[in-house]
Amino acid sequence: MAKLSLSKAWDETRAASATDGKLYVAIALALLALPATIFGTLAPEVLLGGTPENERLQLVFCVLLLLSAIGRIAISRLALRHGTVGEAINHGIRRLLPVAGAFLLYIVPFVLLLAPFLPKVMASPQSPPPDALLASTVILLAAFIVGVRLVLVLVPVAAAEDGGPIALLKRSWQLTRGNWWRLTAFLAVFFIASILASRALGYVLGGVLLLVSGPIKAMTLSSLILSAPLALVGAAFTTLFSVMLARIYVQLSGRGLASVPSSGT
Image 1: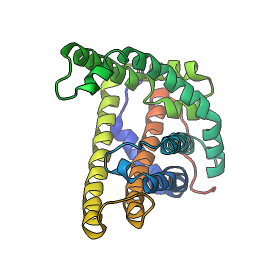
Image 2: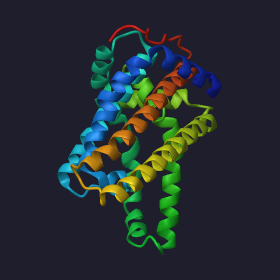
Image 3: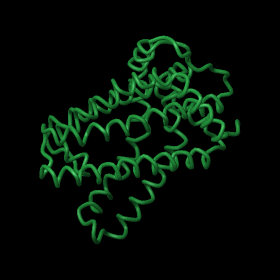
């Protein structure tokens, strides 16, 4: 059982970003920022906290999630192995199905457990049934606890190692043993920081746009102006998150994996 040092992982992340930042930026722009900008322009209500009701937009959102997953795997690959941007993206495409399969194996049982309770809570959010609320809370808490062990390092494991969904989950469980609290602290800090940054930018920029041009509608200049900066901020946090998880994986696995050199695009 390896003892995780978050400070060491952060130092290595900063060094990798300073040396090889152009490679990460290329992937982040192509697979994270650009698709998110397009989606935000099509569905600005999502940027303001809503959900897309149009079925076509929901399909576009699913494509966005797949591209984001490929991007995260590719960034992790570059943080772990010598190679080019093209090779990293190809590797991300090849490893997408095992990652998606592993995530479904993790999430589906919890979704089934929530099915009898969560709809009752959502039907009456102001005064939910106590038993349904308690059951939903316990299940969600269990999903989070297990998720830190099973899926937090899933992407770098898939980027560095072979194997199908079950093998990836077993490997993730093995690597994270004894480091739940440190991994949870890392996840909480990144999540809070990204949410605060995105919300602050969204509220300020959205408020200015509302005052200047009125309601923000789809396929307008206002929706583009709002979505592009938010997409860039999200891509930046996702990139740092992915690189640091890769360095965490190196510590937990005990493998002396080298970071990608500053050449090769």
